[in-house]
Length: 223
Length: 417
Figure 1 (tube, rainbow over the protein chains, first blue to last red):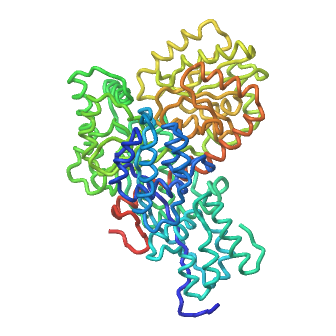
Figure 2: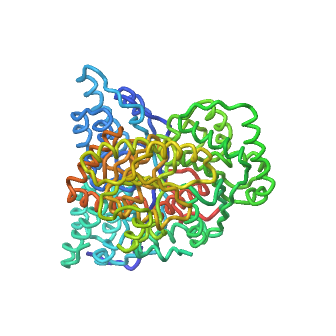
Figure 3: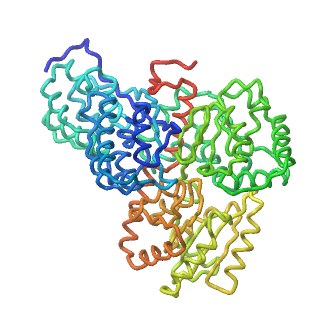
């Protein structure tokens, strides 16, 4: 691994989400499809990823809000299962994720004889979020320091650097890989690329990253 | 007075550090909160904690209360009911009282409000203040703590005209958001783990509270803590209690509530409850003073069953309080209770007195399960519904309002405008 004094240290940032109501809501699957066709892509992002940072039960039955709604409000468990298995991580952009959602929903609309309605107080509310990013003033100078630094990071930092980064980076890459690549740690980047951040909580993701860095640098620290 | 440092013991140092970092760009920002009472009700309780902590983080915060005659509070109580869906007949004179009280209060508050960077108006009572502040320089937010999911339209249309002029609204739940021409933030409220109502108590304190109100400490206690308000369905709770009592004869029921200075209907509902309870020495209807926080805390900790059988609910802070004390809660399937009670995990959501009775019997029969649900419930509150999380969201919203409406606001790249 190369070291270069001119390479910038890794600046640890943190973030907080503010949830915003778009005013759009769906009471049945057809309305859901109609709104999904045009909804702000930030809303698609929020309903797949935002749950990790907003108040919710830590061990939800379904990993995205669309699947939860299909189960609890429409009581369509077939649809809930089909939606819940969608992993947003591999999609190259949010538009392709939206298209996947539409594909599953339209397929289901073709299958069912009658469209189920949610009760008025169980409608799907399309939300989006604003993210406030702030500097923790924490700096990581060398890759080895990740072993100690990552377990101390807040879940907001994990979200910002490992999940949100993929939206910021043209190569859909998390901040750790972007920085490590500049340090020549390509094999570590390959291992990081294999980490799926979706099916679990941010606390679990932090532990997974900590273990990965510890193992790579041959230390026994766990977070 | 509690300082932000005191919360480290409950939340950990990291959470408090984040608040300091988030608050840094807001240092010196002039914020004014306005509501209609210093005591009684959830809003005053939240503000009494939130305001000192915002100050502690370096914001220049003031809390102002509007004044009004009894007629004004009758009007605003009618508005409150109407916004929660009750049809009310209002004559023109009612609107006149409302508007004139707004103008009268603005005489006193105008200079402070016009100078503020952020004004947060809580609930409908102080809404008209904005129109009396034509030289306002800051952003104005309407913070609605009410379940606005199915408002009585004529009253909402009237109040909406005021709300539309604000820069943003904050609602507790997405269900409550309404079509408005400005940005609508969502922010569930929270409890203060260090307050008298939520701090740890000794078993002796819990026992003393039971004895103080003539409860037999060796017998089962079912509890609902709430204002005497029809939306809290106290009569439904009595019905549930009677259904459970036939299976658990030792059961005692405590309906404990206080009076809020802005709720003139409370006395009528209290009379109905007393009438319904008449003749049953095991039903204890307690009208508590606004400062009976330790008593409520002790009753919640000493209860075997906690109910919050609301038919409508803004958020339901009494649910949060009970969950924080490790009690699974049987709650009405309404409003913010749904956000807190994860069915079968932190309690049960019910729609009828019969449903509440069924779940109460389940919890009495499965004490180990109740204990486990209580443990999960406390953790849910720790992660999501403590004051520190509420503070973080407030700070984030202030940043978002001051620094712009883009999806991602990078604070270190920008300086305060």
